[in-house]
Length: 440
Image (cartoon, rainbow, N blue to C red; front, side):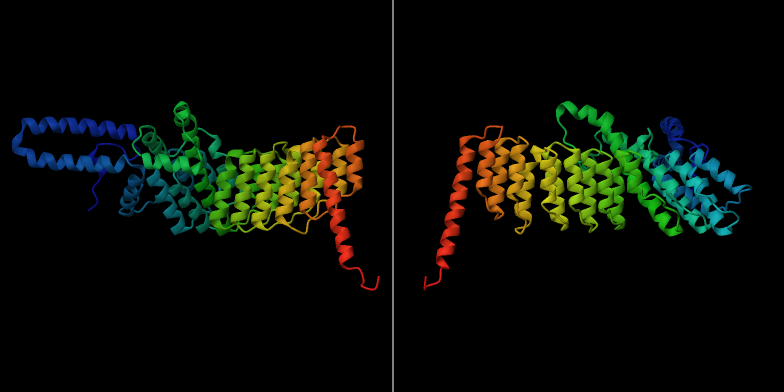
Protein backbone atom coordinates (compact mmCIF):
# COMPACT_ATOMS: atom_id res chain seq x y z
CA UNK A 1 0.00 0.00 0.00
CA UNK A 2 1.25 3.49 -0.89
CA UNK A 3 2.33 5.45 2.21
CA UNK A 4 0.84 8.89 2.84
CA UNK A 5 4.01 11.01 2.92
CA UNK A 6 2.04 14.18 3.65
CA UNK A 7 0.55 12.56 6.73
CA UNK A 8 3.96 11.23 7.84
CA UNK A 9 5.44 14.77 7.74
CA UNK A 10 2.22 16.27 9.21
CA UNK A 11 1.84 18.73 6.33
CA UNK A 12 -0.82 19.76 3.81
CA UNK A 13 -0.71 18.31 0.24
CA UNK A 14 -0.24 21.90 -0.93
CA UNK A 15 2.82 22.54 1.26
CA UNK A 16 5.74 24.29 -0.42
CA UNK A 17 9.41 23.25 -0.24
CA UNK A 18 10.12 25.54 2.76
CA UNK A 19 7.26 24.02 4.78
CA UNK A 20 8.35 20.50 3.84
CA UNK A 21 11.94 21.12 4.97
CA UNK A 22 10.82 22.77 8.22
CA UNK A 23 8.52 19.83 9.08
CA UNK A 24 11.26 17.32 8.26
CA UNK A 25 13.86 19.10 10.41
CA UNK A 26 11.51 19.33 13.39
CA UNK A 27 10.52 15.66 13.23
CA UNK A 28 14.09 14.47 12.68
CA UNK A 29 15.43 16.49 15.64
CA UNK A 30 12.62 15.31 17.89
CA UNK A 31 13.13 11.64 17.03
CA UNK A 32 16.93 11.90 17.33
CA UNK A 33 16.45 12.91 20.97
CA UNK A 34 14.02 10.02 21.49
CA UNK A 35 16.59 7.48 20.28
CA UNK A 36 19.11 8.69 22.85
CA UNK A 37 16.65 8.79 25.76
CA UNK A 38 14.66 5.63 25.06
CA UNK A 39 16.73 2.69 23.81
CA UNK A 40 13.92 0.13 24.27
CA UNK A 41 11.90 1.49 21.33
CA UNK A 42 14.99 2.06 19.15
CA UNK A 43 13.88 -0.20 16.28
CA UNK A 44 10.45 1.41 16.03
CA UNK A 45 11.95 4.92 16.15
CA UNK A 46 14.46 4.07 13.40
CA UNK A 47 11.61 2.81 11.22
CA UNK A 48 9.73 6.08 11.73
CA UNK A 49 12.93 8.01 10.89
CA UNK A 50 13.27 6.02 7.67
CA UNK A 51 9.68 6.85 6.71
CA UNK A 52 10.33 10.54 7.40
CA UNK A 53 13.52 10.48 5.29
CA UNK A 54 11.71 8.70 2.43
CA UNK A 55 8.87 11.22 2.62
CA UNK A 56 11.27 14.19 2.57
CA UNK A 57 13.36 12.76 -0.28
CA UNK A 58 10.24 12.30 -2.42
CA UNK A 59 8.35 15.49 -1.60
CA UNK A 60 11.38 17.81 -1.79
CA UNK A 61 12.08 16.73 -5.39
CA UNK A 62 9.48 18.28 -7.79
CA UNK A 63 9.71 15.40 -10.28
CA UNK A 64 9.49 12.63 -7.67
CA UNK A 65 6.68 14.49 -5.92
CA UNK A 66 4.69 14.76 -9.15
CA UNK A 67 5.06 11.01 -9.79
CA UNK A 68 4.09 10.25 -6.20
CA UNK A 69 1.05 12.52 -6.37
CA UNK A 70 -0.07 10.88 -9.60
CA UNK A 71 0.29 7.40 -8.10
CA UNK A 72 -1.53 8.49 -4.94
CA UNK A 73 -4.27 10.06 -7.01
CA UNK A 74 -5.01 6.78 -8.78
CA UNK A 75 -6.08 5.31 -5.43
CA UNK A 76 -8.94 7.84 -5.04
CA UNK A 77 -10.92 9.03 -8.11
CA UNK A 78 -11.28 12.80 -8.32
CA UNK A 79 -14.84 14.12 -8.72
CA UNK A 80 -14.77 17.91 -8.95
CA UNK A 81 -17.93 20.01 -8.58
CA UNK A 82 -16.89 22.71 -11.09
CA UNK A 83 -13.93 21.13 -12.95
CA UNK A 84 -12.94 24.12 -15.11
CA UNK A 85 -12.98 26.58 -12.19
CA UNK A 86 -11.05 24.10 -10.04
CA UNK A 87 -8.55 23.55 -12.86
CA UNK A 88 -7.95 27.30 -13.08
CA UNK A 89 -7.39 27.53 -9.32
CA UNK A 90 -5.09 24.50 -9.34
CA UNK A 91 -2.96 26.07 -12.10
CA UNK A 92 -2.75 29.42 -10.27
CA UNK A 93 -1.71 27.69 -7.03
CA UNK A 94 0.59 25.20 -8.82
CA UNK A 95 -1.25 22.23 -7.29
CA UNK A 96 0.28 19.50 -9.42
CA UNK A 97 -1.79 16.65 -7.99
CA UNK A 98 -5.08 18.43 -8.60
CA UNK A 99 -4.10 19.50 -12.14
CA UNK A 100 -3.47 15.90 -13.18
CA UNK A 101 -6.55 14.63 -11.36
CA UNK A 102 -8.90 17.23 -12.90
CA UNK A 103 -7.40 16.70 -16.37
CA UNK A 104 -7.91 12.93 -16.08
CA UNK A 105 -11.51 13.52 -15.02
CA UNK A 106 -12.16 15.90 -17.93
CA UNK A 107 -10.60 13.52 -20.47
CA UNK A 108 -12.59 10.57 -19.15
CA UNK A 109 -15.97 12.27 -18.68
CA UNK A 110 -15.70 14.85 -21.51
CA UNK A 111 -18.15 17.08 -19.65
CA UNK A 112 -16.57 20.32 -20.91
CA UNK A 113 -14.40 21.68 -23.70
CA UNK A 114 -11.04 22.68 -22.21
CA UNK A 115 -9.91 25.88 -23.87
CA UNK A 116 -6.43 27.05 -24.76
CA UNK A 117 -6.51 29.73 -22.04
CA UNK A 118 -5.58 27.12 -19.41
CA UNK A 119 -2.33 26.36 -21.27
CA UNK A 120 -1.51 30.08 -21.43
CA UNK A 121 -2.30 30.43 -17.69
CA UNK A 122 0.06 27.53 -16.96
CA UNK A 123 2.84 29.17 -19.00
CA UNK A 124 2.33 32.47 -17.17
CA UNK A 125 2.63 30.62 -13.84
CA UNK A 126 5.81 28.75 -14.90
CA UNK A 127 4.39 25.26 -14.51
CA UNK A 128 6.58 22.26 -15.30
CA UNK A 129 6.70 20.90 -18.86
CA UNK A 130 4.93 17.72 -17.65
CA UNK A 131 1.91 19.79 -16.54
CA UNK A 132 1.93 21.80 -19.81
CA UNK A 133 1.91 18.53 -21.78
CA UNK A 134 -0.97 17.25 -19.64
CA UNK A 135 -3.00 20.40 -20.35
CA UNK A 136 -2.24 20.23 -24.09
CA UNK A 137 -3.40 16.60 -24.23
CA UNK A 138 -6.54 17.55 -22.24
CA UNK A 139 -7.34 20.34 -24.72
CA UNK A 140 -6.84 17.85 -27.58
CA UNK A 141 -8.89 15.06 -25.94
CA UNK A 142 -11.82 17.41 -25.22
CA UNK A 143 -11.81 18.67 -28.84
CA UNK A 144 -10.26 22.06 -28.11
CA UNK A 145 -7.64 23.86 -30.24
CA UNK A 146 -4.08 24.99 -29.56
CA UNK A 147 -3.18 28.06 -31.65
CA UNK A 148 -0.63 30.83 -32.09
CA UNK A 149 -1.84 32.44 -28.82
CA UNK A 150 -0.02 29.70 -26.89
CA UNK A 151 3.01 30.07 -29.15
CA UNK A 152 3.16 33.82 -28.40
CA UNK A 153 2.86 33.11 -24.65
CA UNK A 154 5.72 30.60 -24.88
CA UNK A 155 7.88 33.02 -26.87
CA UNK A 156 7.43 35.61 -24.12
CA UNK A 157 8.37 33.24 -21.29
CA UNK A 158 12.13 33.89 -21.53
CA UNK A 159 11.59 37.64 -21.08
CA UNK A 160 10.00 37.19 -17.64
CA UNK A 161 11.72 36.59 -14.31
CA UNK A 162 10.61 33.17 -13.24
CA UNK A 163 11.31 29.46 -13.63
CA UNK A 164 9.52 26.21 -12.82
CA UNK A 165 10.48 24.59 -9.50
CA UNK A 166 12.73 21.98 -11.13
CA UNK A 167 14.65 24.71 -12.99
CA UNK A 168 15.00 26.77 -9.81
CA UNK A 169 16.51 23.70 -8.19
CA UNK A 170 18.84 23.21 -11.17
CA UNK A 171 19.90 26.88 -10.97
CA UNK A 172 20.65 26.52 -7.26
CA UNK A 173 22.66 23.36 -7.90
CA UNK A 174 24.67 25.04 -10.69
CA UNK A 175 25.37 28.15 -8.61
CA UNK A 176 26.61 25.97 -5.74
CA UNK A 177 28.89 24.05 -8.10
CA UNK A 178 27.17 20.73 -7.36
CA UNK A 179 26.81 19.69 -10.99
CA UNK A 180 29.91 20.62 -13.06
CA UNK A 181 28.98 18.38 -16.01
CA UNK A 182 25.62 20.17 -16.44
CA UNK A 183 27.43 23.49 -16.08
CA UNK A 184 29.86 22.68 -18.91
CA UNK A 185 27.03 21.35 -21.07
CA UNK A 186 25.21 24.69 -20.80
CA UNK A 187 28.37 26.60 -21.65
CA UNK A 188 28.99 24.49 -24.75
CA UNK A 189 25.36 24.77 -25.87
CA UNK A 190 25.52 28.54 -25.93
CA UNK A 191 29.20 28.92 -26.96
CA UNK A 192 29.86 30.91 -23.79
CA UNK A 193 33.52 31.38 -22.85
CA UNK A 194 34.16 32.05 -19.17
CA UNK A 195 37.07 34.06 -17.87
CA UNK A 196 37.73 34.87 -14.24
CA UNK A 197 36.35 38.39 -14.54
CA UNK A 198 33.00 37.41 -16.06
CA UNK A 199 32.24 34.26 -14.05
CA UNK A 200 30.19 36.27 -11.55
CA UNK A 201 28.22 37.94 -14.36
CA UNK A 202 27.59 34.54 -15.93
CA UNK A 203 26.10 33.14 -12.74
CA UNK A 204 24.01 36.18 -11.87
CA UNK A 205 22.79 37.25 -15.31
CA UNK A 206 23.43 34.77 -18.07
CA UNK A 207 22.80 31.44 -16.32
CA UNK A 208 19.16 32.17 -15.32
CA UNK A 209 18.52 33.45 -18.85
CA UNK A 210 20.02 30.29 -20.38
CA UNK A 211 17.72 28.15 -18.24
CA UNK A 212 14.74 30.28 -19.27
CA UNK A 213 15.70 29.73 -22.92
CA UNK A 214 15.96 25.98 -22.30
CA UNK A 215 12.48 25.99 -20.71
CA UNK A 216 11.17 28.13 -23.57
CA UNK A 217 12.52 25.77 -26.20
CA UNK A 218 10.74 22.79 -24.62
CA UNK A 219 7.55 24.86 -24.30
CA UNK A 220 7.56 25.91 -27.96
CA UNK A 221 8.25 22.31 -29.05
CA UNK A 222 5.33 20.89 -27.08
CA UNK A 223 2.95 23.68 -28.13
CA UNK A 224 3.79 23.29 -31.83
CA UNK A 225 3.09 19.57 -31.44
CA UNK A 226 -0.24 20.54 -29.87
CA UNK A 227 -1.05 22.92 -32.73
CA UNK A 228 -0.38 20.12 -35.20
CA UNK A 229 -2.37 17.54 -33.19
CA UNK A 230 -5.43 19.77 -32.70
CA UNK A 231 -5.21 21.33 -36.19
CA UNK A 232 -5.06 24.73 -34.55
CA UNK A 233 -4.67 28.06 -36.29
CA UNK A 234 -1.26 29.55 -37.06
CA UNK A 235 -1.92 32.70 -39.10
CA UNK A 236 1.64 33.89 -38.43
CA UNK A 237 4.58 31.50 -38.39
CA UNK A 238 6.48 31.29 -35.03
CA UNK A 239 9.74 32.35 -36.68
CA UNK A 240 8.00 35.32 -38.26
CA UNK A 241 6.57 36.21 -34.85
CA UNK A 242 10.06 36.29 -33.35
CA UNK A 243 11.34 38.70 -35.99
CA UNK A 244 8.25 40.91 -36.19
CA UNK A 245 7.96 41.25 -32.40
CA UNK A 246 11.74 41.69 -32.00
CA UNK A 247 11.89 38.77 -29.53
CA UNK A 248 15.53 38.15 -30.33
CA UNK A 249 16.10 35.81 -27.39
CA UNK A 250 13.52 33.42 -28.84
CA UNK A 251 15.18 32.82 -32.22
CA UNK A 252 17.53 30.08 -30.98
CA UNK A 253 14.69 28.22 -29.22
CA UNK A 254 12.37 28.34 -32.23
CA UNK A 255 15.15 27.31 -34.63
CA UNK A 256 16.04 24.30 -32.47
CA UNK A 257 12.35 23.36 -32.37
CA UNK A 258 12.12 23.52 -36.16
CA UNK A 259 15.19 21.33 -36.54
CA UNK A 260 13.85 18.82 -34.01
CA UNK A 261 10.37 18.66 -35.59
CA UNK A 262 11.84 18.82 -39.14
CA UNK A 263 9.84 21.95 -39.99
CA UNK A 264 11.54 23.83 -42.89
CA UNK A 265 13.12 27.20 -42.11
CA UNK A 266 12.76 28.91 -45.47
CA UNK A 267 14.80 31.77 -46.89
CA UNK A 268 11.87 34.14 -46.25
CA UNK A 269 12.45 33.94 -42.50
CA UNK A 270 16.14 34.73 -42.90
CA UNK A 271 15.27 37.61 -45.22
CA UNK A 272 12.69 38.93 -42.73
CA UNK A 273 15.27 38.84 -39.93
CA UNK A 274 17.84 40.71 -42.05
CA UNK A 275 15.30 43.36 -43.08
CA UNK A 276 14.13 43.76 -39.46
CA UNK A 277 17.77 44.27 -38.36
CA UNK A 278 18.01 41.41 -35.87
CA UNK A 279 21.48 41.04 -34.44
CA UNK A 280 23.65 38.84 -36.62
CA UNK A 281 24.02 36.07 -34.04
CA UNK A 282 20.32 35.32 -34.46
CA UNK A 283 20.59 35.52 -38.23
CA UNK A 284 23.32 32.88 -38.01
CA UNK A 285 20.90 30.66 -36.02
CA UNK A 286 18.37 31.05 -38.83
CA UNK A 287 20.93 30.35 -41.56
CA UNK A 288 22.07 27.19 -39.77
CA UNK A 289 18.45 26.07 -39.25
CA UNK A 290 17.67 26.63 -42.96
CA UNK A 291 20.66 24.48 -43.89
CA UNK A 292 19.75 21.78 -41.32
CA UNK A 293 16.15 21.61 -42.61
CA UNK A 294 17.22 21.29 -46.27
CA UNK A 295 16.36 24.81 -47.46
CA UNK A 296 18.41 26.98 -49.86
CA UNK A 297 19.79 30.45 -49.20
CA UNK A 298 20.00 32.64 -52.30
CA UNK A 299 21.44 35.94 -53.47
CA UNK A 300 18.54 38.04 -52.10
CA UNK A 301 19.80 37.41 -48.56
CA UNK A 302 23.30 38.45 -49.54
CA UNK A 303 22.19 41.69 -51.22
CA UNK A 304 20.16 42.66 -48.14
CA UNK A 305 23.14 41.82 -45.91
CA UNK A 306 25.32 44.12 -48.02
CA UNK A 307 22.76 46.88 -47.41
CA UNK A 308 22.45 46.23 -43.68
CA UNK A 309 26.06 45.61 -42.56
CA UNK A 310 29.24 47.52 -43.32
CA UNK A 311 31.37 44.84 -41.61
CA UNK A 312 32.81 42.11 -43.83
CA UNK A 313 32.05 39.11 -41.56
CA UNK A 314 28.24 38.95 -42.13
CA UNK A 315 28.72 38.95 -45.92
CA UNK A 316 31.32 36.18 -45.66
CA UNK A 317 28.97 34.06 -43.48
CA UNK A 318 25.92 34.49 -45.74
CA UNK A 319 28.09 33.69 -48.79
CA UNK A 320 29.23 30.48 -47.07
CA UNK A 321 25.63 29.38 -46.44
CA UNK A 322 24.70 30.10 -50.07
CA UNK A 323 27.47 27.72 -51.09
CA UNK A 324 26.63 25.09 -48.40
CA UNK A 325 22.91 25.05 -49.24
CA UNK A 326 23.46 25.12 -53.01
CA UNK A 327 21.68 28.44 -53.44
CA UNK A 328 21.74 30.81 -56.41
CA UNK A 329 24.52 33.35 -56.84
CA UNK A 330 25.50 35.80 -59.61
CA UNK A 331 27.53 38.92 -60.44
CA UNK A 332 24.59 41.08 -59.24
CA UNK A 333 25.77 41.02 -55.63
CA UNK A 334 29.14 42.51 -56.62
CA UNK A 335 27.45 45.11 -58.82
CA UNK A 336 25.24 46.02 -55.85
CA UNK A 337 28.18 46.34 -53.46
CA UNK A 338 30.03 48.63 -55.88
CA UNK A 339 26.96 50.78 -56.55
CA UNK A 340 26.47 51.16 -52.77
CA UNK A 341 30.17 51.94 -52.18
CA UNK A 342 30.54 48.93 -49.84
CA UNK A 343 34.31 48.61 -50.19
CA UNK A 344 34.64 46.34 -47.15
CA UNK A 345 32.76 43.61 -49.00
CA UNK A 346 34.79 43.61 -52.24
CA UNK A 347 37.43 41.10 -51.14
CA UNK A 348 34.93 38.51 -49.81
CA UNK A 349 32.62 38.83 -52.81
CA UNK A 350 35.41 38.56 -55.39
CA UNK A 351 36.86 35.53 -53.65
CA UNK A 352 33.48 33.86 -53.39
CA UNK A 353 32.45 34.63 -56.96
CA UNK A 354 35.59 33.14 -58.47
CA UNK A 355 35.58 30.13 -56.12
CA UNK A 356 31.83 29.42 -56.27
CA UNK A 357 31.29 29.31 -60.03
CA UNK A 358 34.00 29.28 -62.68
CA UNK A 359 31.48 30.49 -65.29
CA UNK A 360 30.89 33.81 -63.51
CA UNK A 361 33.04 36.54 -65.08
CA UNK A 362 33.79 39.86 -63.40
CA UNK A 363 33.29 42.44 -66.18
CA UNK A 364 35.89 45.10 -66.88
CA UNK A 365 33.20 47.80 -66.62
CA UNK A 366 32.83 47.12 -62.86
CA UNK A 367 36.52 47.88 -62.34
CA UNK A 368 36.16 51.19 -64.24
CA UNK A 369 33.01 52.04 -62.22
CA UNK A 370 34.85 51.38 -58.95
CA UNK A 371 37.69 53.68 -60.06
CA UNK A 372 35.26 56.45 -60.95
CA UNK A 373 33.59 56.13 -57.54
CA UNK A 374 36.92 56.57 -55.79
CA UNK A 375 37.51 53.07 -54.44
CA UNK A 376 40.82 52.48 -52.67
CA UNK A 377 43.64 51.18 -54.84
CA UNK A 378 43.85 47.90 -52.87
CA UNK A 379 40.20 47.14 -53.74
CA UNK A 380 40.78 48.06 -57.41
CA UNK A 381 43.70 45.64 -57.39
CA UNK A 382 41.46 42.91 -55.90
CA UNK A 383 38.90 43.52 -58.65
CA UNK A 384 41.54 43.42 -61.39
CA UNK A 385 43.02 40.14 -60.12
CA UNK A 386 39.54 38.61 -59.66
CA UNK A 387 38.58 39.64 -63.21
CA UNK A 388 41.76 38.01 -64.55
CA UNK A 389 41.07 34.81 -62.54
CA UNK A 390 37.51 34.71 -63.88
CA UNK A 391 38.81 34.85 -67.48
CA UNK A 392 37.69 38.40 -68.25
CA UNK A 393 39.85 40.33 -70.74
CA UNK A 394 41.41 43.53 -69.40
CA UNK A 395 41.79 46.17 -72.13
CA UNK A 396 43.25 49.64 -72.61
CA UNK A 397 39.94 51.07 -71.32
CA UNK A 398 40.88 50.04 -67.77
CA UNK A 399 44.38 51.50 -68.11
CA UNK A 400 43.04 54.81 -69.47
CA UNK A 401 40.43 54.96 -66.69
CA UNK A 402 43.18 54.40 -64.09
CA UNK A 403 45.39 57.14 -65.59
CA UNK A 404 42.58 59.66 -65.95
CA UNK A 405 41.05 58.88 -62.54
CA UNK A 406 40.74 61.91 -60.27
CA UNK A 407 42.08 59.73 -57.47
CA UNK A 408 45.74 58.98 -58.20
CA UNK A 409 46.35 55.28 -58.74
CA UNK A 410 49.71 53.95 -57.45
CA UNK A 411 52.37 53.00 -59.96
CA UNK A 412 52.21 49.38 -58.81
CA UNK A 413 48.55 49.12 -59.89
CA UNK A 414 49.17 50.81 -63.25
CA UNK A 415 52.04 48.38 -63.90
CA UNK A 416 49.78 45.41 -63.04
CA UNK A 417 47.11 46.60 -65.50
CA UNK A 418 49.71 47.33 -68.22
CA UNK A 419 51.42 43.96 -67.87
CA UNK A 420 48.02 42.18 -67.86
CA UNK A 421 47.02 43.89 -71.11
CA UNK A 422 50.36 43.05 -72.75
CA UNK A 423 50.17 39.45 -71.54
CA UNK A 424 46.62 39.02 -72.89
CA UNK A 425 47.55 40.64 -76.24
CA UNK A 426 50.55 38.32 -76.53
CA UNK A 427 48.41 35.25 -75.86
CA UNK A 428 45.83 36.50 -78.36
CA UNK A 429 48.49 37.06 -81.05
CA UNK A 430 50.03 33.64 -80.42
CA UNK A 431 46.63 32.01 -80.77
CA UNK A 432 45.92 33.81 -84.05
CA UNK A 433 49.36 32.85 -85.43
CA UNK A 434 48.95 29.20 -84.53
CA UNK A 435 45.69 29.06 -86.48
CA UNK A 436 46.95 30.98 -89.55
CA UNK A 437 46.27 29.00 -92.78
CA UNK A 438 49.39 27.37 -94.29
CA UNK A 439 48.94 28.98 -97.77
CA UNK A 440 49.26 32.55 -96.36
